[in-house]
Length: 245
Ligand SMILES: [Fe+2]
Image 1 (cartoon, helix red, strand yellow):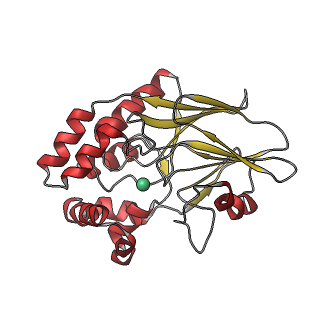
Image 2: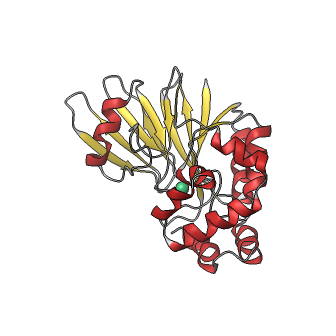
């Protein structure tokens, strides 16, 4: 079985459409989203429609959550706050209800899916370094977990002796899933990468070959960026897409 795991689309329709085309080329039918469908980008409603029409299961990201929970936006920086207020005023009631229905995590036979951390009390904590991943590894009941949130693709590997190491996913890479190890894989961001590579990112999990591939893809940044400016959103949100920051 092959799964694609996407995350942090952030209302970037051009990036989402390109990611879905790449996934189709790979012949993958089962797609999961690790959250943050909306926020920052100019097409939140269309991204939600596409996720729903393709039957993609998603977990709740902090921006998805903030649409219906204004207290969450107090934790946001000024750009994120302006963008979530714009998103809240732009999307339909139906889209808001869909976002409020998303679960914080999903456990499948082959993997677990979450947005920030496997932490019931603080699901939007960040896993940036090996030390941040300890609690999530403790709570992980499958061998592999996929997440997003930092917009930086990479993999935390916990070996049998408990040592946690890290592998970057800034460029295309393959991670082989070996017995005895556990894996927390940040699939990166479809719509707003922040690891210095402006190409979008997602992961492919081949459960027969026991391989996870982090794939990077180019998309029409010019178009997505222009829409952000035309929508009256902060210019920085348009410019950062070209830099991957
Ligand atoms: Fe995000």
